[in-house]
Amino acid sequence: MEELNDYEELGDIELSEEEGEHYNKMINLAEEQIEDVRVSFRWKSKQLNIIKQASQLIGIPYQTYIKTVLFNQSIEDIRKAKSVL
Image 1: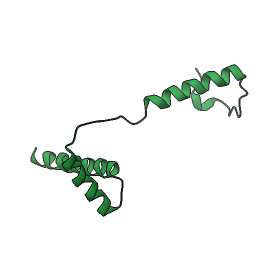
Image 2: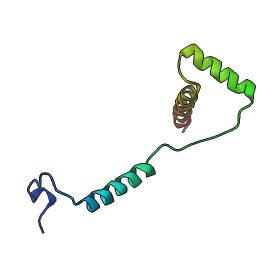
Image 3: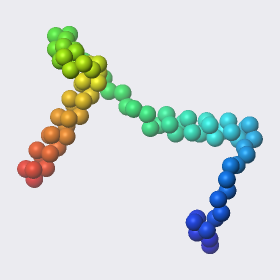
């Protein structure tokens, strides 16, 4: 059985319009499956206003601020937990 590396370069492959549409649909489906995951939670307006104020001071949108802070805190929590083990 030939190894994959034994095949010659195929170059550009011509697809029929139907094949092209099929492959584009498959690509789009695959991309949809790896998109961002949405997370929602409820905030009191006072809490959200504090978050918005902090994000304005830094100069980034509050959603970006929330994601950044949560991500960084998660990394720190994991580091602390691993150091205890």
